[in-house]
Image (cartoon, rainbow, N blue to C red):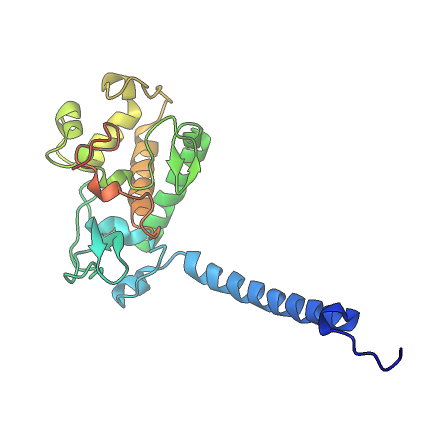
Amino acid sequence: MSGKKVSVWTDNRFWQRSAVWVTGFSALLLIWLTFDTMGQISMGTQKDIDNHVIKRVPSATVINYKVEYKMNQRRGHEVPVIGGDDGKGNSLFKVKEKFFGRDDYSQQEADALLHLGKLASQAKNCMDCHTLLGNGAYYAPDLTKAWLDPMWQKDGPMQAMTGKNTKEEAMAAFLMDPGKYPTHARMMPNLGITQKEAKALVAFLKHMATIDTNGFPRGFGKIKEGAVYAKTK
C-alpha cells in the first residue's frame, strides 16, 4: 500500500500549495490594479494640458477649451476631444472656447467652480432622477455627456427657448427656472438653484463631459435632437 502512486489531483499538499500561490498572486494583482486605477482616475492639471498629456479625468481648466465627441479610430468608439483634434480623434488642447465670457480660468478658479458644482449636484440630489457617470436614476436624461447634447447647441431648441446666445447661459437659465421652459412630460422641479450655483453646475457638467468613459453612454454620439427627445440618425 505504501508504494501506491497517488494522483496529484487528490494530493492535499498540491491543493494547499496551489491555494497559497493563487492567493499571493491575486493579492499582488489587486495591489497593482489599485495603484493603476488611482492613476487613471486622478484628476489632471493644467500642466498636463500644456504638455499635451491626455488624462482620463482631465484638469478642471478644460472649461477653457472647446469640447467635442468624436470617433477615435484606434479605440473604435467615441471619446471626448478637447481643444480640437488631429483627425484621428485625439485631443490637441489648442482651440479655446469662452465659458461665461472667459477662456482664461486659472487652475484655482476652475477647481473652485467645479467643487461648488459638485456640492450643488449633491445638495440638490440630482442623482435622484438623473444618471451621472453610470450612477443614479433613469427617470430623467443621463447627464454624463449633457454638455455635448445637441439640444443645447447653437442650432438646438434650448438656446432659442431661453433666449440665450451661448450653451452655458442657456443651461444656467434652465437650471434656475426649469418650469419656465417645458421640455418633457417629466418636468424638472424648481430646486431654488442660484445664479452662482447654476454657473458652477454647468462647469461641473462641462468637465464631466470631458471624462473618458470608454464610450459610455453607448450611442450618445448618434443622438440627433438631444437626449430629452432621444431621436437618432
